[in-house]
Amino acid sequence: MDAGISCRETERRMSRLGLSMQTVKAIFVSHEHTDHISGIPVLAKKYRLPVYITDSTLYHGGLTIQKEQVFGFKAYEPVQIGHLAVQAFPKKHDAAEPHSFIVSGNKVNIGVFTDIGSPCDHVLQHFQKCHSAFLEANYAEEMLEKGSYPRHLKNRFRGGHGHLSNKQALEVFIRHRPSFMSHLLLSHLSQDNNSPQLVQQLFNAHAGKTQIIVASRHEESAVYQVQAANDTATVPFPQRMEVKTREQPVYTQLRLW
Image 1: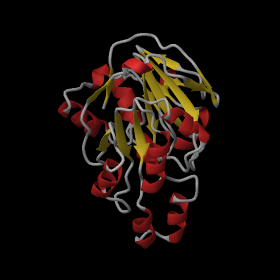
Image 2: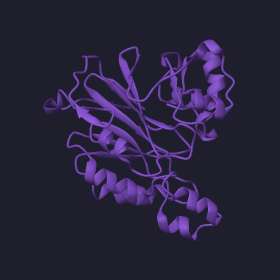
Image 3: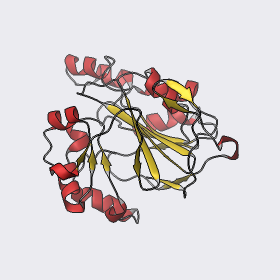
């Protein structure tokens, strides 16, 4: 999902985890901002990876990718990549055509919820179906207000199409976390307007049985195994804003890193 760091740094981080880029089968692009796409051209070319991206995101991102490697996707239409199904859905963010994703396999759903201006119904319905998720906790409201960013940038962050604050992310977690969520990786923290220690402490107080991990911007996160609980063999999955039951095929365990 996205590739904002360089190909070389991606390889280094994968290697330190004992993983190989040879196991990666595709890249999905959420939106065109540079911190999400900068590494894609080299990664895609070097490893001959298909890049799933909307036409509008490709155009506004100005990415140079071989035509035969470009594939489109549509919201709520799953794309099968090996044993995994990847489904996109719209989100609120100041980009051309932004999406978040759910990755499904072995009756496990993992969500990628970053760069979210506000927790809209799309986000909330999908979050409720996740056994594990990446959730944006971009800024601490007081740190942003007192920080050095210009007023227009502060307003962009908190204006409904920018990023989720710690408080907003915590509300999503407390009010919409399913009982079977085993891991929550808090992601996309601002370097200037947030503190990993603050975020960890804030969410630990409400963690319950969910393991809270604050993802670092400077190094890779660990690899976790995510399994479906016995009482969630079939998890309802939203389809175009409607919650419907959908049987998932049985695969091997879904790896999360």
